[in-house]
Length: 116
Image (cartoon, rainbow, N blue to C red):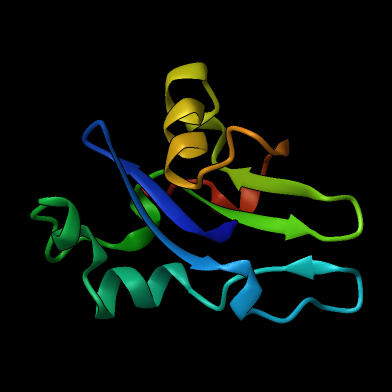
């Protein structure tokens, strides 16, 4: 089982995951990756691994989100920009994070709102 971050750009899901068994849960039972959108985009250029040439762009202009695991409820929480909360894109997120057999709860989160 994995958690992590993602973007949706040019019909491509760009994402980075980490196995939850390599992470610590917090006092609320939540397990989250330490990845930050700004660092993965602007320093590590994650988009290059997905054949996207987006140098010079800022991480917050594209729809993005985060997958967290709640160990107390045995459920994944997915926070994302409302513009990508639709069936085709949520299916891509489910597949990328291997969530097909798990309970998932979706949240449209203004923290991930895009800015152009």
